Amino acid sequence: MTAEKNGLPEFVPVVVVGAGPAGIAAATLLGQYGVETLVLDRHETVYPLPRAVHADDEVFRILARLGVGEEFAAHSRPGHGLRLIDPQMRVLSEIPRNTKISAAHGFPQMNMFDQPELEAMLRANVKRYPKVTIHGNVEVTSVTQTQNGRVRVSFLDRVRGGEQSVQASYVLGCDGANSLTRASIGAHMYGLPFTQDWLVIDVNTDVDLKQWEGCHQLCNPERGGTYMRVSETRYRWEFQLVDGETVADYQTLADVESLIRPWLGGTPADALELVRVTAYTFRAQVASRWRDRNVFLLGDAAHLTPPFVGQGLAAGLRDALNLTWKLVGVLDGTLPESVLDTYEQERKLHAAAMILMAVSVGAAMTGGGRVGDLIRHVVFPRMQNLRLPGTRVSAADGVTPGLRSSELVIKSRTPGGLAGTLCPNPVLGDGLRFDEVVGNRFALITSSPLTDAQRNELRSRGAVVVHAAPDSELEGWLRKGRATAAIVRPDRAVMQAGKNIQALSDALPAFSAVHGAPDKTEKVTQ
Ligand SMILES: Cc1cc2nc3c(=O)[nH]c(=O)nc-3n(C[C@H](O)[C@H](O)[C@H](O)COP(=O)(O)OP(=O)(O)OC[C@H]3O[C@@H](n4cnc5c(N)ncnc54)[C@H](O)[C@@H]3O)c2cc1C
Image (cartoon, rainbow, N blue to C red; front, side, top):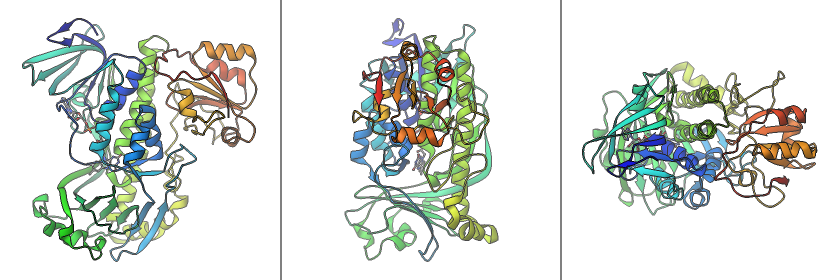
């Protein structure tokens, strides 16, 4: 950071607006690479109200990358899957989840947690990175691109008083659903005509309600609902508000008891403590643009989803992982500026596919008439085979879509290749998982031997070579993708895969910004 004025820098390479999960994740990853980053937020501490409660195994994998994997494991509760139920509590359909270790990412597939608790972990963890500064109690008032290719961020400092500003090379707008950064780049939200008001009820109790420990989606065109156990003592319900109702109608346990009674069994209402009741308007939208020159949008600033498949916070973490290493490479001159275009190209369709999945579940829960019946009784019971058009995403296997083609996702002509998909995270020969070995670097996974020259060349470009031994998980993965080698990016998406080792070695970008990568051996055999 450059000279300070009133204890604040005048210039920082990256300013992050918003210290929610997306902002702190982005700052942590930048901090791991040693990039000076200033995070500005209107609050001094985490937003205290519970919102997200579900994270899948891919998100757990990202949390482990951020450095909070063990703590998250200690505080989260593996869930058993998703059930659609009818108003008589009969199960219409079930998508089970593995509570142990998933093959795709190496973590439980469904994890229940408390968002403020997770955010507190992330905030404590980011303090390990000395290049990251969080400045709370400031209201960002404008984000303006200057003539010299920099961005000026102005803010009201509630502690020091008065209007201040800082310049940055890049600004990441992680400022949530009502993003000022989004407005500053002239973007607007657009999407499906899906707007529903829902009541969110959080309850604490020492009594075990003894329900199936997954997410119950109540399919009822008159009032859809959701129930799930979040922790040892915390339970969450969400119910659609019907015409004429507001949150004011549901302020006490007595008000909500008739809604939640089907899950209480014999438990008396006075054994429950109401943590809070609030209402949210659920939307299904993406921002019209996610970037203008040196300003980017991440998290809820870029996309909003109904929480029916628990993927909103998840999408923000995926944004942070997708963008930050590209920014690092551009900042230190190892990657061309054009790679920054791939952020929106890759992330927008992915986010839209997840939103579509959430809206489909919402339609099953709340859709009336013959269409609703058709979804509930015909589509969902066959969900094991349901795939979203144009993607490989399936509700049944929990694997999210692959990324579309870009400068950094080079697909072969034959369908079903590995490019754009995420590589697995198996335990390698030395007992460490793939991610622990590779850290924040590129990797070349190969089942064919490399020449010394190829190995030296890859090392000089900062990449890790991982040898996929015969019959290992990685070798099986390569074989299934009809490849003998794959370039894996720092965010674990496959850039390119195939059988021509020399061509793949040549295509692997030089990426030397590895300040935070673990210091493990360069060659690992699985
Ligand atoms: C009821 C409900 C249930 C949900 N369930 C799930 C779930 O199960 N799983 C899941 O993955 N997601 C879920 N979500 C979504 C998840 O909570 C959000 O997607 C996530 O919090 C978004 O993170 P973010 O960092 O993008 O934005 P936010 O968390 O909104 O953070 C934005 C930050 O920016 C700051 N800020 C904004 N404007 C300014 C400004 N002008 N100046 C300074 N600071 C500013 C704010 O103070 C805030 O700290 C749920 C949401 C709701 C409402």
